[in-house]
Length: 433
Image 1: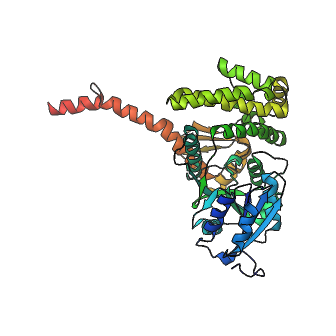
Image 2: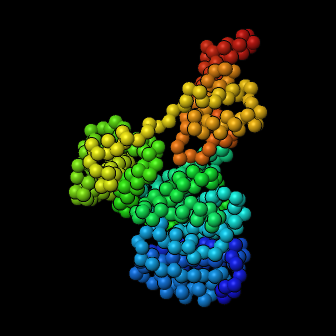
Image 3: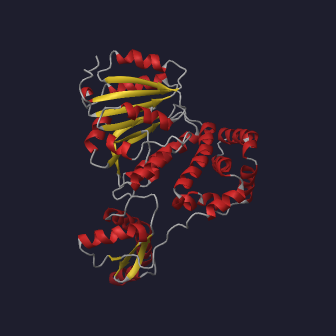
């Protein structure tokens, strides 16, 4: 039975959905098995233009749910508007957004609640669950997701707006409404990235909690993913229009030098963005053939071309042809470089904590130079769209520098010195004789 409606919930869980009644039922059942008390949270399922039995499924489950369960419906055709509608009716002090294909494991809700702090945005771990016989694209997609979560889990990871995934995330209701919620002008994709940008600009801190596990049931195929890539191109233009400081870096992969085949496809994408469906279907059939023949190298190259082509189509549909796109990029500020008067931190004589904090405060906008005994070993340029620079970010940067440069160099030195004719070998040989 539902708890008394007079009780004020600590948490509101918002589940946006569209024609996924079976998955929504699994999510609702999983929420009834949480370690966090069911009487302390409410669930709002927001059905967006559903034509299946989603609404009947939710209404039927409400009679047996151990938590307060509400059904909201509209026909916006927008993930941003759907999540905003749920937030507008939520009564909890904390909002947890959970996609309808992310089935929460028993500790997810408690992990989110325990990780909440003032001005903190808690990102959960959506573990990809693939079909019984996944295709090559689904396997690659799982690797991409796992790599993204692995990076966020590294101590000292510097979060950016592109780490904000809305499928398993929580924050204070006051913070969500302070920044204005999701931007409903993003009707296709990347409304979560845009909200992540605004959250970081207001001083919110992203925090990854791997214990907040949800099983993400991924059924997207290559064709659907390519349609999403096309939407990503259009959405990145909107992000670049709103935040010009991101523009050049956003599209660096589009303007970079490329081979002849990729160049021809880009020319077609910008010249005739609406006429490429037939060519895409032909290339998709070719990719399917490569997969059947187990030609993975050729398959990867072709999928990369299709990704680039569809992204450029989305850009062209939003901004115009190549000359218009180039002119638009030239209007944007250049990516910031390390300023001449950027703070310098010498690792051999670290400043006091207060002085280091002040240096990092300026380094967020000016960049930072790291030195060792007066010799510069690393520069960290300003990074638009990233959280302010902190000392834990320096620790990670130095660890990665050591892994990439110092450790291989030291290993090579040891290999050379212990090889025949090397100093250590000669020393040991002379001792034996």
